[in-house]
Image (tube, rainbow, N blue to C red; front, side, top):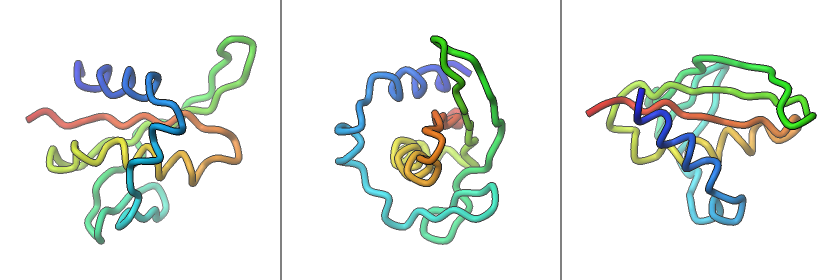
Length: 98
């Protein structure tokens, strides 16, 4: 659970320009699953709707299927953020413990 908070803090600290250096090559989205080079990397774990700072916020949390995908968590955040940009979703990725 502690690792989840680390990645959430990373998301908050990262601006859109910071995400530019992360590649989405090999990442695809099908239904509620995210694949990396054809392998299932993350599944949608939760969808939330919140009222934050006088705004409605849409939030999606993806759960990695294996610790081997921890290194591409930010890449997945970038990909999912681009995919859901119509509602400006906040994307979280829950890491797997090593």
